[in-house]
Every structure is written in structure tokens, then in C-alpha cells.
Length: 94
Image 1 (tube, rainbow, N blue to C red):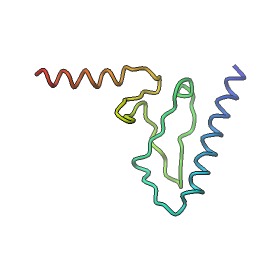
Image 2: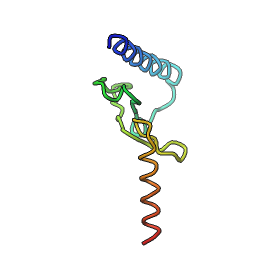
Image 3: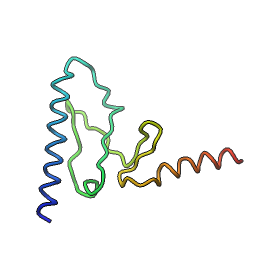
């Protein structure tokens, strides 16, 4: 359990350092905080990790989103993608 805790702490530190580097690199560009989403994948989604904040703007944490036409969920199952396509099929049939 202790290794799992340190792995999660390392993941949070890695996210924070990546955000810091991105902010430093793209300081001149305006960032659209409303379009930016954060999703914790796998076991990290079950921990109480503080929300990501960039320039005092909290980033919305989501359980799933669409990426390149594929719906991805935080548990990495196909349920979200299949449910979306089933709903399309049902609306086409009616």
C-alpha cells in the first residue's frame, strides 16, 4: 500500500511539473481554460487528488471525453463509447 501511495504522489508531482513547463513555454499565448479538461485514469481516479489549477483557474475534472472520435472513460472501458453509438443507432431507427 505504501508503494501505491508514493506512486500516486509521484503522478501528482509529474502533472504539476508538466503544467509548470507548459506555462513557462507558452506564456505569450492565451489559454482557453474553459475548454481544458482533466481526467484521472485508473486507480488515480479513486484518490482524493486536489484539482488542477493553472493561473488561478481551476480545470474541470471529467469522467469521460471524446478524443479523435473515440469516447474515453476514466476506467478505460468501452462502455461510454458503446453507449454513445447505441444511442445513435436508436435515434436512427425511430
